[in-house]
Each structure stands twice: as structure tokens, then as C-alpha cells.
View 1 (cartoon, rainbow, N blue to C red):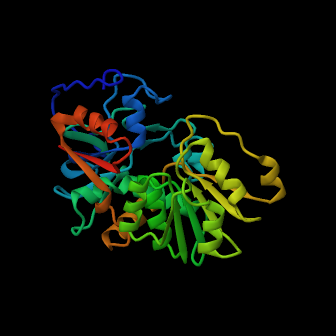
View 2 (tube, one colour):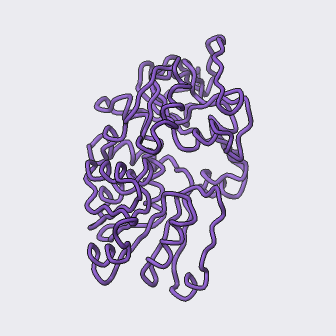
View 3 (cartoon, rainbow, N blue to C red):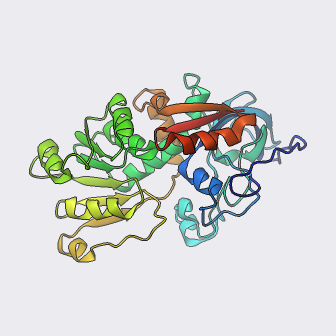
Length: 334
């Protein structure tokens, strides 16, 4: 992407993997909300030109000399984080919030290319039962697994998810798969709420037509939600979350806020609310995502609504704009 709205194809030599790398023949690429921000010139941490692509699956085409844990023709996914390994978060196992964090496809080259070299430690093998399409959705599913993990053990809890887009849908499915006894998703898009129903989400609500507070009491009872997960990243949803929360409950913030919200910290203090941020994922989240998708506990196939060949990459963005919100996951076939 040479500038907002412009994509240029370039022929390069096939890369040679370093000793600790594998060369992946990329097969599928998913387009996410952050990619769309780059397309529109609205991503604050991306400069042009940039090769995109961070939700990907592919096949191992070549192994570096020191790589022993993978084999040729393995079907794989990759973790697109580039970390320093030296800062406080990295030294304490929190490399997903590395002080110098870069993400492939944003601050460093991504995988929207036929062959992509990457360090073997960032590559995970997929079971034979998983398709390339499913593999491309492991990355956003890992975002959901990390968000759930930030709240601790949620077995037996009642969970409210604000937002039914791809991440909100996956968070709701992950909550169910992790033992939540009741899950409700709120969104203003009936299209996305219908997708949530098809994915087995127990309760859905459009707050433009039904009062959210009444729906919480109806579906969860007087003790309300134990956990609220914000997956939109707009001021209105966090403004909904705080007064909707039961005293002493937890709110996990997953949505990325382009506009700084106003937060009623008086209510946060008075109700002793726990507000927790969630960024990206760690390897354990990837492993859990792969396990749940492979076992059919999380349905990612239902989320794929559009598909384009690699040489029509730009058309994928135009289709997203034209869809006016009536899409979930767009896949590019390489």
C-alpha cells in the first residue's frame, strides 16, 4: 500500500530464510479493522509504503538450518508481533505489550506476498483437520482468547459482550467455550446480531430497539452480568458499560478507541469496578484458539462473508466500503 487507497504490486526475488526462520508460502490473508484504517489513512502508527497482511495461513516451503520443530509442507499460522525481548514487559512474559512493539503489516513488512520469511518461534503448526480459511482466523480468535483470559477463570459467569463484529462475535464464542453459563451480545447492526445467532450466541440485543438495562435483568437476573467485554472502541459503548456493570464487577476493554472517551470515574470508584485493558495475545492464546477451532467449539467459517483473489486486493477494500457494515471477515486467496 503506497498511500491511502492505493495498492501496487511488485515482483521481488523469493526470500531465503535465515538459520532461525522458515519460509511460508502464504495461502490465505484476512483483512481486519486495523487494515481498513490503514486503507483510509486513519491508522496513527502506520507509515507508507507498507506491505500489509497479519491474519494469515500458509505452508512451510523452506526451513532455516537451525529449525527443528517444524517440517516442510506443515500447514501453519504466525504470530505477527515483533518484540525487543529486553524491556520490562518482555522480561516478565508480557511481550504482547513490549515497549518497542511492532506489528507485521503496520510498523514492519507484512505477509501479503507469495513467500514470507519469519522466525520459527513465531510459527505454530495447524492440525490436519483445520482448513486454510480457519487458519487465517486464528489470529483474531487469539485476540478473543486473550481478552477472556484477562478476566481470569470465567466458568459459571454471565458475560455481556458489547459489539457483534468479528472480534465481539469471537469473544462471545470464546466465553461460551470457556464455560460461561450465559452470554449476551449487544450491537446496533441486525446483520451482525444474526451472525451471532448463527454462531450459537445465547442472547442478542439491539439497544436501539430494546433497553439494554432491561435486557440484562431479563437474561441474567437481578445479579446482572459478572463480566462486560467492550469490543467496539467508541465512546458510546464504554459509556454503556460502566453504568450497566454490577457493583464490584469487571469490564475488559478490547476495542481500539480512535476518539478518546469520557469515563465516569466517580462511578468506577463508587462501584469498585475493575477496568482491564486487553492487547493482542500471547502464544498460549494462539494454542487455545487453534484447539477450540479444531474441536468445533468456535465457528469461524460462519464469519467469512467475502472472498477475493490476490490480484484483486484493492477490490476487497472497495467491497468493504460498499457493504456499509454488512460484512464480517473478508479473505484474500493468494
